[in-house]
Length: 269
Image (tube, rainbow, N blue to C red):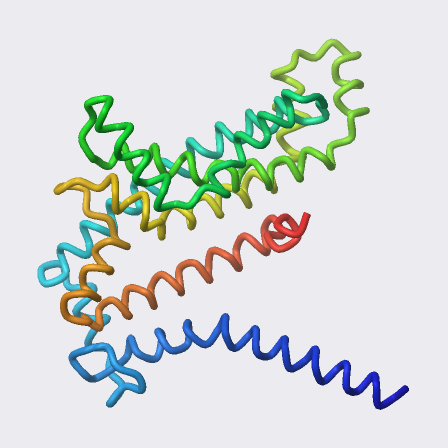
């Protein structure tokens, strides 16, 4: 029996270690490569240097990267705010309701998670072109709102399921309006879920490639597309440096969200 337990622990531990290696290994390789001394992306690096980070933050020689990063940040913030507002309202409207139409609406709202992003990006391009719109940052933001809203809806709905209906009934029996009840009772309870969903929406929009690729115009260069082009043309090590900065920023944000709202628990719920 003891040998069987040891074998089980060995197999599970080995699979867990393999999964961790697959997940963390590429990140570590990118981070090490970002400090390369060479003039192209190669692993292992020929030497270690901060030259590519210095070049990345140079406002003149990396101006195109900075402009693309600002565009991506602007779109991500707009998509996060609007997706959070829309998904929160949808979650409150669908909470504790049952029926065929509720299931249909829930499936409709979650559909962007199932639909392939490339197919949606092409469909969005054809639709907006048919409507007479040209590719721009505004269209990219609309596309990102559609695909990140389900993330906010899922975390907010999980928080809504933990809201005690007696609190809403007590508020209504005391004469409170629906808006006052939402502001003083519902919102404080679901705020952690909203914050977790907003964080996921921001990250999901920031690194979205398919929709940005189809809806970007000549003046709406996005950071993922810029990085893609730099990889295809010259294997510029600044791509690894950009990845290093993004990894560090997202890691810090994840630690903050985990400390403030318990991000892991919200995703598990």
